Amino acid sequence: MSIKEKILNDMKEAMRNKDEIRLRVIRAIKTAIGYFEVEGEKREATDEDVQKIILKEIKKRQESVEAYRQAGREDLAKAEEEELKILEEYAPKMLSREEVAAVVKNVIVELGATQKDFGRVMKEVMTRLKGTADGKVVNEVVKELLK
Image (cartoon, rainbow, N blue to C red; front, side, top):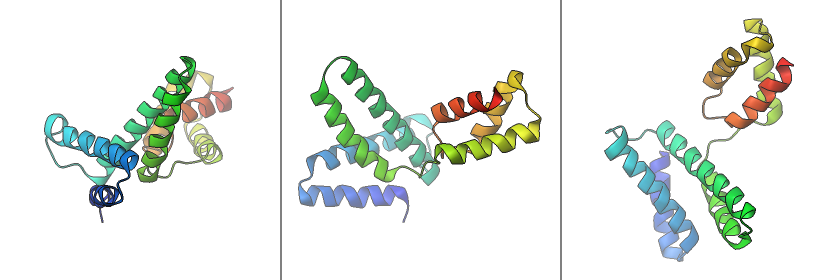
């Protein structure tokens, strides 16, 4: 079963169970996928495309939570966090910081990289870890290991 099919089935289930939050989040995902297919790429979204869309939605929610907390709106931050939990159910498994560090170490050795090669190392690591690691974490690990 593709991710799109799972989302559609989960949407039907959320409607049956009258789970408003889950339904709202799934509809947002479905809308983003539809936008991708009609406006963006003009082709049917693959599982990889859907995962990228979900990761983008997660990032939006994380940024919203931070903004709401800085503005002192804990009620809105909690609502975004609830949506974030639901989105994470559909997200690909992300690598831990230790797993990212292992890949970064390998790339540094392979490239014979020094501190000046930050960009080269980042490009290679992000190519290898596409969709499985947060860019922010990769950036931090590369900076640490190149020092």
